[in-house]
Image (tube, rainbow, N blue to C red; front, side):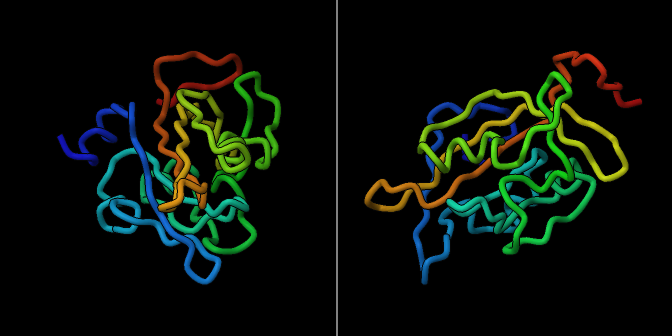
Length: 161
């Protein structure tokens, strides 16, 4: 089974992502360097620098966020208009799971985060964030692979019709 199939099926155990810094900027390698390939994956995927700057995302992420983020600018850690904890409280973007990964190099698996779109629509996302490492094993970025989590009910979250 190839990497795209594994990601689509949610079989994320053991995934590792590589990249390099070129002129101080992240250059993802492999699948993450192929925009068409990640656009074809039906779950949200986005890549960010260690400072949290979003550098690429796929169409499924844009659909979940209800907006297209300004890549490579001041957008940090997630392209959602607003993030919320499962309790409904606002989650600052710099406390989101990708920030944890870029700050400590670990992996965040199966975390629930509510993504709020500009029109107020909220989706419960199951997020899995992995570090992107260079050849010397230094964290040079992160990738978030997320999907709508329909298996859980969250108080105050209205189910989609």
